[in-house]
Length: 487
Image 1 (tube, rainbow, N blue to C red):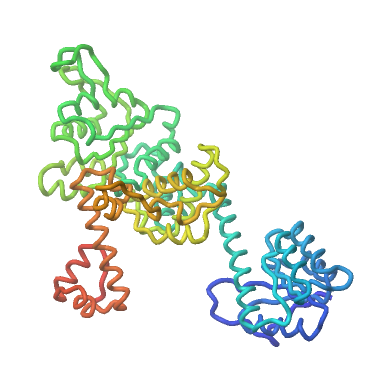
Image 2 (cartoon, rainbow, N blue to C red):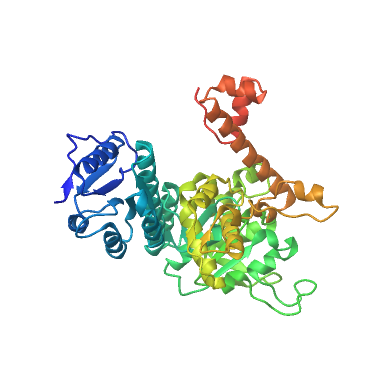
């Protein structure tokens, strides 16, 4: 008969953060069966028991189990037959076989057939049993977690191509979903690589304008003397080289969406014309006096503080308020580390499929390593990292050594000094030198002060002493790094 050990006899340890592992103990020897149940219950596990294989099969049909601890030699249905049944009917359950020394060869064959491990009787210690069962349960948990991540991707826990289930991203989805059906101007804020253009595209795709053009321009990538022509068009002869009349992006995007990336870099005259277009829907081609009316929804984005630009006089305050009707701030990846596994699996599927590689999983150690990174280049850097790993992976699972920041680079003679330096994070290479240097310094300060505060338990005086700063300067530096400190 299948039994469930009563909590009143064998209490489960309280205060556990995760659901305790559920273990089925199958042995025809009553004393050993009850002893194992008591041992595992005393270590905080839930335990079911059965005295032979047939009763274990009945139990498994009714109860979900993480680990089955099974005696190899039993009457009626033996351990190998029960193993075969579990692997066919309950594939997620891990199986540990218990065997006498004389049956070790059989147990090894069972491991090859899918058993997690085997224990020889008599056991070397109670700790050996508990550790083996705990590891098997952890393996089951990690497999379940990987499957959950895949299901989350299938269930579209994302908005357009944006992916994430963290509270910060849920707020992004809420704002984007709310503003998408309207024609309101949107200002998207966020560091380089956080997905500003993906957000803009998703808003467009969920809007009534989805069937019309989505037109994007990076304002910082266009020469200053050509920005107006790109946005508003020009007539023939308007300037040297204008050999033909040409419509601008506002006309191209008519009844659609125009995405202005890095809008903070627009030159002053272009800002004036953009303000007029937002206010009245009217534009003039460069060199023309003819006014044209367009119906364009503008979504702008920037990775700089526009208020600072306003203070120094390089960005118009009235334009800022015209753009900032609805502001959506994209969090940096380091502030939503819980989304890293979900994103990593998404990119794994994308690049494995694109390259025709049969790579299906990320090793648990790989996921932990990815979650420990600061990701100065944000999601773009993570994507590049997974693409790199797919190229160099030689199995169906990406291991830590497949990641670019763990691989050793051999150097040629004369390159030792260059190669010995720490590798530059992928995302920083996409930025101009000055911006990359500022971002690297800012990321260092955040990581340094956070680690120091954690090490000192939030003790400001002690943290300041260890940093070699006086208390007031330390507080100022910590606040500048965006970290709150208690008074």
